Structure formats: C-alpha cells, structure tokens
Amino acid sequence: TSSEYHRYDDEPDEYPVRKFYEKNIQKENKRFCECPRCRDILLVKIKGVQPADGDDSDEDSSDNECDCSDCVANRRDRAPRESFKTATSVSVHVPSFRAKCWHIGRKRGVAKLLWKVALLHHNFMPFEALGGEEEKGTILRLTGWGIIEKVPGKSNANVYRMDRGDQTKLIKIFRLKDPSDKDQKSECLLMSDVGPCLLIAAWKHLRDEYRIDRSLRMLNRFSFIGLHFFGYLPPLPLSWRQ
Image 1 (cartoon, rainbow, N blue to C red):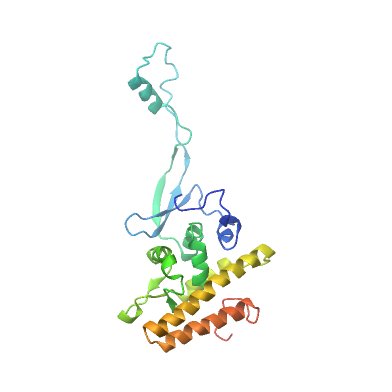
Image 2: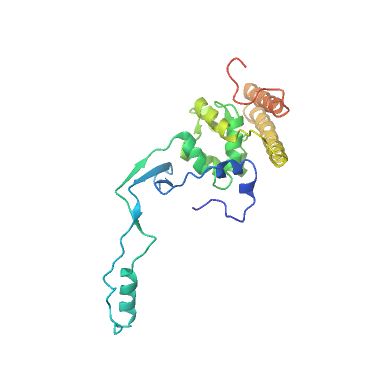
C-alpha cells in the first residue's frame, strides 16, 4: 500500500520498524484501509471468499472471429480472470488500538514516532518533545488516526496526550525479549534522538511560556528515560507502586 516501505529499504530490518513486520495482519479475509473522509483506520472483514467463476462462453468460438480493436477488447474483457474473487459479505469495523498500531507501524516514519509516544508521559506530550517541525506531518497523522489527541485549552495548543491503557499496549509492542547487538545499537540511536527533543521542549516551555512546571516535567522525564535505558529501572510499563 501507499506510504509503506519497499522491499529494498533497510528500515524494515531495523528496530523499531522490524517489530511491525513480525506479524502479517493483512489477510485474505481481513484488510485495513484508511477512510478517505475522516482519515481514520478501518477494518474490512470479508466472509466467504472464493475464486470467481470464469466466463466459458468463448470456449467454442471459431477461428473466424473479427480482429478489429473493439472485438478484441470485448473478448479480453469477457475472458476469465483468476485473480478475481467473490465474497458472501463485506463489513466495515473500527479496529482495536493494538491492531491499528500494527497496521500504521509499517508506514514510513510512523514506527519511530510511536516509539517516542510510548516513552513520554501519557498525559503530557509536547509538540517539541515529539520531534517538532520535522515530525509535524507524522504527528498530524497520528492525531487523525486517533493514537494521540490534543489537550483542550488555549494554553495547551502544542500539547498532546493519549489513554494510559493504550500506551501500555503500545509499550508491549516494542518490548524486546532477546535484543541483539543490532537492536541495542538502534535503541541507542533512538535515545540520542529523543533526548535532545526533551531538552528543547523544556527550554521552550521556560523561554516562550514561562512555565517552569512544564520545563521541570520535561527534565524529569528526560532523567526517567535515561535511568530506564541504563538499566536502573524495571522494564516498562511501571506499576503505580513502582
């Protein structure tokens, strides 16, 4: 589909994009698509899929058929096509949050931003912490897909949030049981990208909005993520007691 990686790209073989290629969710009886109106992800369930019956009316045709372009095109259109299939019923559903993430994670640039979303606080995700202007298009796409949403209020124009339970499901998607050396290097590169974003967000909250509280929250999150990657904290997600 459009905006997905090609087979000759290197990103699908690297973490975190590789996680979304471990499972094939596009099946013959289950397809994901993007609504052309609201841009949300929809799940199309197809039942009773079977090959279409070919048209056998031309089996006894003679060799004296007309060879004009119109007749040739007409015979070609009536020829049996093995790729065509029929179904008894087709229904459209709203997929679960986890299924939606498995689908959009294969799109270009989405997996890395989802990885950032999984690390930030679920109720406080500033625009600059998510990547700023460089990730503006992907941030808007995640908002349209319902992964994150804007925090209401005039003072929260560039702050996003998401459901805590949904963030827990997202964290579990990125979890590595036996990370390889290549995966660890990829995590280090991702960490080197998210760290400066958090520091920039902290500085802009202090300089532009004079919000010391928000600046301290960003610095606190920066320390939390650093302790997590150096192994001083249990694996995410943490419980309330932890």
